[in-house]
Image (cartoon, rainbow, N blue to C red; front, top):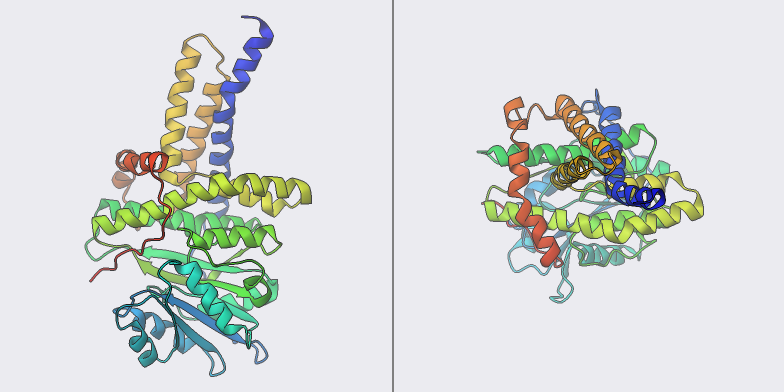
Length: 400
């Protein structure tokens, strides 16, 4: 084998390990910068009288729990603020429950265009006759923590950019090991990593609920989408037109992991298949835009999106490391193996930092060491993405 051909083969073999090293190192940087952070002490702030505010709550058959959600929002609102529930294709008593709780309710019926994106678009069009300065999105199965509404609205107004609250999942009443691992993974994705980006002065992804937008941003792109991760898509579309989301660590929203195994599987499939779809579609767009416009924030979002769902990142990194080592032992270059080993170490470093700083309430050290077994259990979920990816919005079944 001549030297030029050998060099070409080495470069080709090193591409994937290099990509994994880059994304794993980026993840480790986020976790390192976030280390030492704790839940911010709320500093109650009042909204200025001249700031108009509306809260949209999309709801599909949420009669059982919507009153609880609205009870966490209404005490934070002023008399002039508007609370609008979009009853989207409801077949239960959501409308009556929301009105009784004190919300304005608008009803939408369209069985071909289903999903939260369409519901929120319907709500925005309802507000267009008298648009607010800031609009806030809260899911109907969430609790908005005290003072969070003002924190979100003030940040969105001040920065003229979307603001994303800390959005966490509580474990079910009798949690198992999988619930602890899921809660920890959710915490890394929705608190640790965005906090690291916030401290680096960089934008973040939208993560599902607890989102405030200046009216100009709310209407800058279309939100009418049945995409299974419509919030992530919205944030990326906004970033591409100049409204990159920013993390708001003083605002908190909580929800609950489903206790049923089927509901949990449905939820994980939607989140992770949606992330992979966004990765393949938007990373090239973001990279191209960052090069054309010279915008560091767009490049950072491309890196953030390129980090695979944590279980898959672990799985792929270990597999490529083993393959690269085999190639090296067969007499080819050691460069791919060294890069892959660096990716493994960066990933271990990131997970360890996140657990030390944020995960010990969810997982013991013994539990942490079982994560590889949890990862193996998710192989069918990722295999399904290759053969039959989830594309349709499916509501996660609620407990009770």
